[in-house]
Amino acid sequence: MSTITWITARGLFGRRRFLLLLPLPLVLLGLAVLCRSLDVDPGEWGPPVLVGLGLAVVLPVVALIIGTGVLGAEIDDGTVVHILTKPLPRWQIVLPKLAVAAGVSAATVAVPIYVAGVLADSVRLGLALAVASALGALAYSALFLALSLVTRRPVLLGLVYVLIWEGLLGNFVSGTKVLSIQQYVIALADRLAPTGLLETSVSVPVAAVMTALVSVGFTVLAVDRLRSFSVAGETS
Amino acid sequence: MSTLSLTGVSRWYGNVVAVNDISMALGPGVTGLLGPNGAGKTTLLHMMAGFLAPSRGTVTLDDEPTWRNPDVYRRLGLVSEREAVQSFLTAYEFVLASAKLHRLADPAAAARRAIDLVELESAQDRRIGTYSKGMRQRARVAAAMVHDPQVLLLDEPFNGMDPRQRLHMMDLLHTLGDAGRTILFSSHILEEVEQISGTVQVMVAGRLAASGDFRTIRRLMTNRPHVFAVRSTDDRALAVALIAEPSVSGVELDRTGLTVRAGDYGAFTRALPRIALNRGIRVRQLVPSDESLESVFSYLVEA
Image (cartoon, rainbow over all chains, first blue to last red; front, side, top):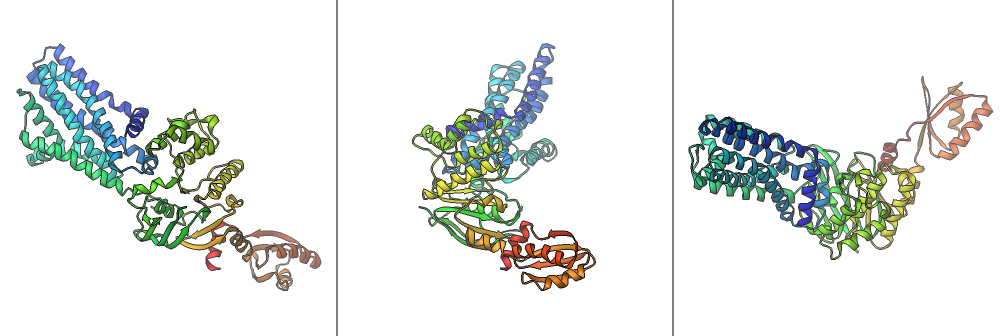
């Protein structure tokens, strides 16, 4: 268990693509600090910064970069073979990788969004946002980890889901919000710290159940796909 | 002692048949899997190693399927062709991680023993990224056999190695084979496998073209009819003289010169200068025209 975690973490922090993670949380943090220091009304900057930037962009994009990287990068460069030629049940490979992905994503997002929440309203909102994004990070990570086993272009498909499905369609076809991790995170955060800043569109029980379903479902899918993982030969 | 058995194994991708109805049983000792590029060697190795499901047929290691069965890796090691390694690790860390993932009782000792076997101790604390190709290959071999597997599969292990490293690797494989391990390596370069003493399986275009003792097959390959393109000052006169030679089985004359088919390589190349000298013909060009590996291998299919 610990060996996979260790290799995954070293692989993640050792690659340059990890640096891509830094700007987004910094922008979120910077904007919140700027608005607060200029004494802008939180009712005005809260929703666009906390939801529009934090939950709708920073959280899914960070989870996308990390989630598709923990296994996808090893599949791309072929090092995954070293892990797969071991007599390990495949869940013992998927779970540590998921843990690293969810943990690193949650830490990267929770800290700036906690600060932004505190600046916008209260410590309670900050904590609620941090906890909800951590749960969201888990769901997103499971989704993107599974994607990296199902398709050869996990980043592209993940972006389509985040930008088109959650970002665009959600505005026009309200039904799609029931299948949107972003909406679950908003609903959970609002339940933990009710303020006027977060606008929810799914009920809390739906959000809680769906978050759990997405996390577990995609993890099971990933384990199953890894079990029948095929290495493409030179002919394909 | 473990046996890797393939029964009627085929694998196709859409319309393309990569591996066509191959059956073989691999026992202890060193076996070479030879064939030109694109013959399906890698596909076959991947099916043996449980990284690809056969479209038809079965691949078993001691009667257990290798596909969707991670337990076979207790007895099987694979060195794949892509030389991907976590280059940020040192060889020792890399092999040690392998040992730990195998849940070996004493991973540190196992890692040191494996590194010892491939003679990499002096460089074991350097990052793999700084290694030469041959060293990287040895590090991967060490990682693949850290758990002392009964069966070791190597895909093109000699690729990019210099002759000395190749010799060393071959010695290592033979040491393991003599110790009762089942070793299979693939190669598309005949010269690479000169020193091999065991059996070979020759694959051409997805099929098993020949299998058996290496020396027998090697003789088959060198005794095949050879084709030469010859140009001289008087092609027709040379053709008349050549066809009288027992070593020549056919002569063709066209505008560009002669195409000579010789049954015996040595006898023909000795006879040609003598004939030319006796008849006062000057040979301007003599080119063997089918020395490519593909033709050597495909000759075996027809033989």
